[in-house]
Length: 439
Image 1 (cartoon, rainbow, N blue to C red):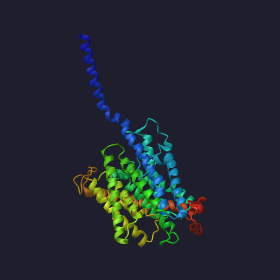
Image 2: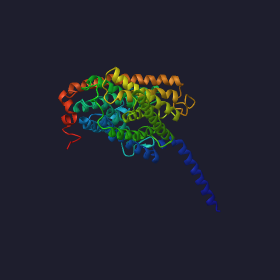
Image 3: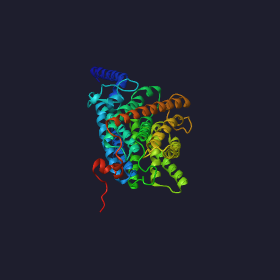
Image 4: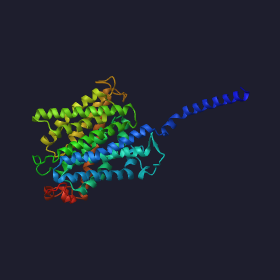
C-alpha cells in the first residue's frame, strides 16, 4: 500500500467523523425539516377517514334520525357546511388557529395560506397535509351542531350561523388548546378534541336548541327516525372514520397512533353495549338506535383520552359513556324539555367533558387502571384541576359566543321556517326536492 493511499484513507475517515459531528449538532433542525414517508402516508389516510366521518357518515346518521320530509335538508346542511368551513379554513381559519402567539386567537401571517409552499413542513409532515388534516376537524365540528336544530332551521340561517360560529367559537378553542394558546400553556391535555370538538359542539347545540325552540309535536311519538338502516350505516362509517380522527391525532405512524386506535375501538364497543343494556333494562327492548348512539357516546368520550389511556382505562371510559350519556339524554329532553333534536349535547358535549376529566385519573402508567402513557408531569389531582379549568373556560366561551352567533344570525335572516313549512318538511320548502317518491 502506498503512502498516498494511507493518507487518503486518513483524510476520508476524518471527513466522515467531521460530517457525523456536524450532522449530530444540526440534527434537530435537519430532522424537523425532513418529511417522513410513513407518517405522511398514515396522515393522508387519516385525513380521508375524518372527512369520511362527515360525508357521508354523519350526514347519513343524522339523515336517518329525522323524518322523511327532512332528510335531504340534513344532507344538504352537512354538505354545505363542509364546503363553507373548507373555504373559511383557507382564507383565515388555519391562520387564526395555528399561527401567532396570542392567548385566544392566532395571527394573520397565514391568511389565504399565503406562506404555504410545496416544500413547507410541519414536523415530519408536509405542512399542506397538516393544513387539510386539521381542516377536516374544523368541518365536522359545526356539522355536529346540525343535530340540535334539525327539521326547523332555515338554510340561509344555517349558512350564516356556521360562518359566525366557526369564527367565534371553534377557531379560538382550537388555538387555545392546540395552537399554543392559553389552555395549552396551562397544561390542558386534549389529544383529539374532547374540548375543541365535542364540548364546543355540545354546548353550542344546547344554546341553539334553546334559542330556536321546540319542534312542533315535541315531545311526541311523531318525531321518530324515518330510516333506521341509514342510521346504522352512518354510525358504522363514523366508527371506522374515528380511527383516523383519534389515531391520526398522534400525527405519526407510531405506537401512540396504534394505541389510540385500540382504545378507541374498545370504548366504542363498551359504550354501545352499556347503552344497549341500560335501555334493555329500562324499556324491556334493546334498539338499534340505542346501540348505535351508545357507540357514538363511547367514541366521543374516549376522544380526548385516546392519547393517554390504555385498554383498561378505555373499558371504564366506555362504560361511563354508555351510562352517563344515556341518562343525560333523558334529562335534557325529559326534565329540561330542551329539543336538542339528535342529542348533540348529552352525547358529544357530556361525553367529551367526561373524557377530558377522566384522563387525569387514567392516563398515568402507575395510576388507577394504568397502562396509560406518562402524558403529564403533575400529580393526578393537579392535572384534574387543570383539565377542569379547561372545561370551564371552553364551556363558558362557547356558551357566550354561540349565543352571540345565533343572535347576530337572527338579525340577518329569520332563524326558523314558518309553521306551514315545518309541517310540509324542509326538503320541499327549502330545497324544492323530495327524497322519496310514491308510485
